[in-house]
Image 1 (tube, rainbow, N blue to C red):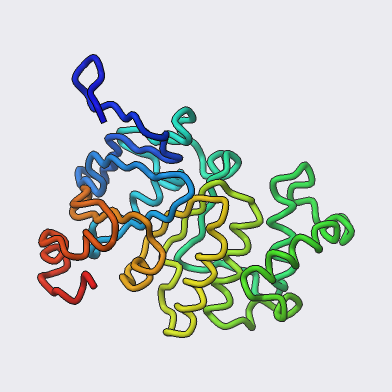
Image 2 (cartoon, rainbow, N blue to C red):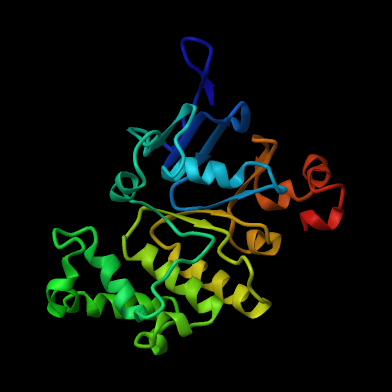
Amino acid sequence: MGEGPDGDPRDDGPVPVLRARGLTKEFRGFRAVNGVDLDVAEGGVHALVGPNGAGKTTLFNLLTGFVKPTGGSVLLQGRLELAGRSPEAITRLGVARSFQITSLFPELTPLRHVELALASPTRLGWRFWRSDRTLNRFAGRARELLAQVGLADHADVPAGSLSYGRKRALELALALALDPKVLLLDEPTAGMGAEDVDRVVELVGAVRAGRTVVLVEHNMNVVASLADRVTVLQHGKVLVEGPYAEIRRDPRVVTAYLGDPDAAR
């Protein structure tokens, strides 16, 4: 990295798929995100971690358009400004997200959910009610996606009957249906038992092929298993960034996690 004509840092490497500069969000005078710079390399898994109140979720929402920034920019592939765009517009550009709290239609099957997701970006939109044939054309691809997340045997049961872990898997299938370049996952293992956590780690490891993954995650074992790079936030700012093996030993990270050495393991 060198310097530009004004003395500012100049990046000579590959253009990050997502680049935030000076990203800031104020809520009534409180800065939840305070001048964050973030580079997300294409094709990797980048984790956002930190103690409660660090600004992870707000930053995540800024990247996906669910919160409008007070200042700063977010560039997709070095040229498309995302800051200020609607979530729908950002999704159309190839950036899809999942949610920490799963919202599904309990009476609809997983198959129907994914068919709807596949139909939504097309000219058919949400006109599915006109004919079952409108959605049936997506059934083959929908079943492929459900098989990819381990739900092939649960494609035709009401979504409300699925276990919590399988609902999260369905949520992942819905995000994948949008065929995103960048997939953002908000606490993908929140509230799960060990067996479901292992299953999600395996799923994310499988679906990362050909795309970039950004995840907010509290479970540091999950971060260790998946992340190529980790950004640790504290008080709305970047505290430290690097490979997991480095940041887990950083004294600043240990202190941020209330001085508990086990928190960074």
